Amino acid sequence: MAQGPTMGTLPPKDTLLKLVKESFQGFYSAYPLFDKTRFMSVCETLGTCIDDPGQWACLNVVLALTFQFEYETAEELQELYDPDEYFRTAFALCGPLMTMHVTLWSIQALLGMALVIQGSPTQGPTSLLISAAMKLAHTMGLHRRCQNPDIGAAEVEERRRVFWIAYSLDKDLSLQMGQPSAQDDDDMDVELPSDEDSTPPDAEQETGSCALRFRAKLAMIQGRIYERLYSVKASKQAEADRVLAATELEAMLQSWRASVPSKLVEGFQGHLSEIPTSETNPYPVILHLVYFNSLAMVYDALPALPRYRELPAPCKPAELQLLAAPLVYAAEARKAIRLLQFTPPRGYACIWAVLYIFVRAATRLLRDIIDDPSAPTARPDLQLIEPLIVLLDALAQSPKGRQSERLGDMYRPCKELYGKAVSAVNRIDHAGIDWDQWITCGQSQEWADGGEFDCNGVSGDFAFAVEQQFQESTAV
Image (tube, rainbow, N blue to C red; front, side):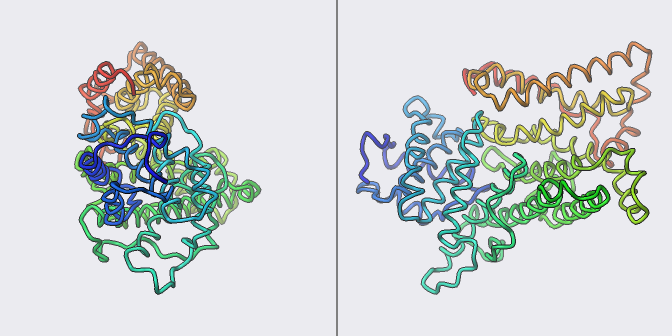
């Protein structure tokens, strides 16, 4: 397949190589989809023809991701190249990718397109792309342990990473949409991605592989959450069985969190201000938010608290543990919302990808405030949520946001709850409650967040900065 005007216009070769390298330093930390050495060798051959539609689609997907995240070079070239053109070029090849000779490039291209869509205001055909990628992965046997002696170690590891990225996206989307996943966990025996001891060729690839290993383990728990709490079979189980399943799943998540190396997510055990994230490395934020969302799915599947008292005697230990679930849920929701400060804002691709998780966390806290507006955590929680509301307002008023049904489904209910929560707290103020006595750093800290609650929440400066960013932007 020769390059030409019908296939899209590429930047000059030296600019292209720079863009690709920048992209690998960014999204690659979260999704090490390609072997960098192999991919760069394809870029070096651009003086000739690219006959493989999978290679051509992958090249355009990487460029689309680079412009979407607005890395330094991409930001400088926004006026010269249409970022959407690269995605359209790749998407136009979906037919050949799914029906012609299947290659690893084909699967990587489909997954890359799904990542582009996730970082945009519209949901699009994400589920179809991920499902198609999983089916092609089955065709290539990526779900099985590789025993072919003709496949080198680097390619074996790349095949593993591709499968586990597809698997993680599949399980995450399954929980998000409440639908069965494409991969049956009983029908796979592929090894997890290598950890840091395997020493990949460079530091970024090493970090990406290590992080993906823990993301894959979390995805396996996500699969169990769906199976035991949200599947058709789970809907028919007794309430006592549901509570016990939730208890076991909560323990799995806590065990997973304890196993994550501190270098990946400092904020799990320490202060969130110490999270080692950056404009180019969103992985710590993503990993923590996926953990919170998984925990929230467990808690949301529980029966209403008063009904715990109706459980039979064998469930009493579980009852005692789960009576604390609302407090744990709220504390984890606060941690999740604080991560908004650390989510890389470039291009807002990261924000679009995880916005629904921020909204879930805020929704939980807002409902708690409405239920008990006199609680010592009510006003600090409102202050914590305010920057998210500012962000949602700005997104809803942006050109792309106004066209996003996905955003509307999140924005309207959250905005309504926020208004009710503010009104409820204001009524308490008018009733003469002395908030200075209720909210003190020493007392509300332990109550709200297990010793980690910051009475300042999210600063007003951050809320102002978010608003200013969107006022200066013509499109999101």
